[in-house]
Length: 355
Image (tube, rainbow, N blue to C red; front, side, top):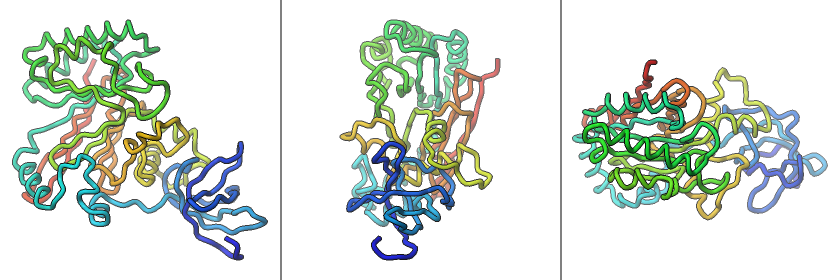
């Protein structure tokens, strides 16, 4: 940086002083002037983002000419770079032989499985409970895994009220033949559900709120937010947060005008940054590894309050089921919908329960 001329730097955008941004790496911090910066890549650039910068030092300030997100690395490229065992957060596949054995099984049995994913399941709304009955009855013979994401109330998070609504849900499930004993459920808390204040990652729904579900649904899992699923060789991340609007508010500059929608910019930001929260938000740092997206998963199911969307970027499926409480929209995700004997393909089906 001490030399004149244009420089290319990689670092993190930080706010050391109020309203004053710096580019930081593990050796130094330099003030940034982004007033004339050109954005090179799709995506939002916010404080805490890692960026590639082209600029020039003038009077101790780095005047940015161009900047953008770093180059993304696919899961297969990461596996080649850092090794198979390092890419497996579950530590279930340490050798290529084990991976091949699992892939043989997923070709045979993988197409049988599906996830039915709902977000913003407001149990305090009678019409939501009615539509849940319709949904559970309709999938009774398919035996999917039901993923229910919060928030589980439309306003507030009164613990006593929520306990009653979970009891109502337990009773509803019990009225459908075999569902309580055989059905598989994953409950992911939303931002306003009971738990630790606005900090990530969020712990599971408290036991005292969900005692009826825990007693009568033996195959229910009360997950953290985010959480991860291993389906044969596939890794799936479930995350409930209003990411698109939060990234828009936190952006230092508007995204480049490339014709992409805001949800596409949001998807690219998360995957390019390799992190579920690359913007200012309280994070429990000892558990920050739970927020990381490196190596990229095979799928990210993102419960955002925007309308349904499906994007594939860097060999990663990103799916938003949409808010169930708004128009009873949900998504059916098949991690392994088809196979040619060596490779597999996923499938996304957007669905909606009619009034």
